[in-house]
Length: 342
Image (cartoon, rainbow, N blue to C red; front, side, top):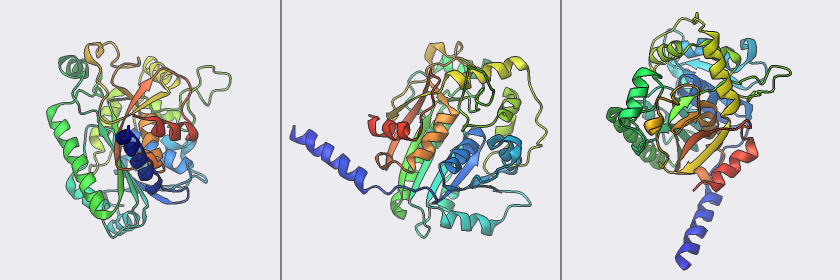
C-alpha cells in the first residue's frame, strides 16, 4: 500500500513539475511526408507559431495539403526547405535555436540519425519539449503475415523488420540521452501501420459520413498509393526534389481512403510499447479496413502536438492505435487520453 501511494505521489509530482509549451510559443516540425505535414498543421491550429522544416517536395505540396487552395491565411505556419537551392543554413539554425517545442516525424520507415538530432537538440537553444515519432517495436503480431501483406497489398504495413527496429531503437536512445544533456523533456509517440490522414467528408454539406476538418485537405486523396510511396521515397529528410504534378488515381481508391478517414477516428492511447501488429489478419486489413496494428496519421500527428503541452507526457513513451469511430478527440479529450493512459 505504502509503495503504491509513494509511486502515485511521485507520478503526480513529476506531472506538476513538467514543462509544457503554451500557445504562441515557437514550435519546429522536422521530417517528411503526410504525418509530418499534418502535425505542422495541427500545431498551427493549436496556436503555436509553427515552422515546418521539410524536403523541397513537401514544401511544394504542403500548403495545398494543409489549407484549401494553398492559402494559409492567418494560420501561423511557415514552410522551410531543409535542402535544395532555397535552403538557408542560417535560417534553419535560427529556427532550431528559437523553438521551444520540437516535433520529429517521418512518414516512411526512416529514423532520425545522430547528426540530425544533434542539430536540433542543443543545450544552448530555447528548447523545452521534444516529441518524436517512432514505431511499435515489441515484435508482437509481426512476422510472416505482416511481411507478406506489406509485399502484396500495402507498402505502408508496418512489419517491424530488424534493420528498421534497430534504427528506431538507436534514435530513441539518442533522443533520451541528448534531451537529458540539454535539460529537455521528451516524449516518444509510437505508430503501427499508418493509414488515413485526410479530412474525409467534413467539408461536404449534407454528407453524413463526416470526418475531421483539422486534418489534411481533400488534396491528400489525389495522391495514389504508389504515388505516396514514391513521394516518401523521394522526400527523405535530406532527399531530393519531387515534381508537384502528382498523378491522380482511381475513384474507388479515393472512396476507400475517404471512408477510412470518416470511420476510424477513435483513438486508443496506451503507455509503453505494448500494442501488437496485424498478425494473421494482416492481408484482410492491409488497405482500407480498421485492423490490429493500425495508427491513423491524424491521431499520430495530434499525439505529437498534444505531447508538447501534456504534463503527463514528459519523458514517457506512448503507442497510438486506430479504432472505429466517427469522433476525433478534441483538446480536452487528448488531455484526458494522456492522463488516463497506462
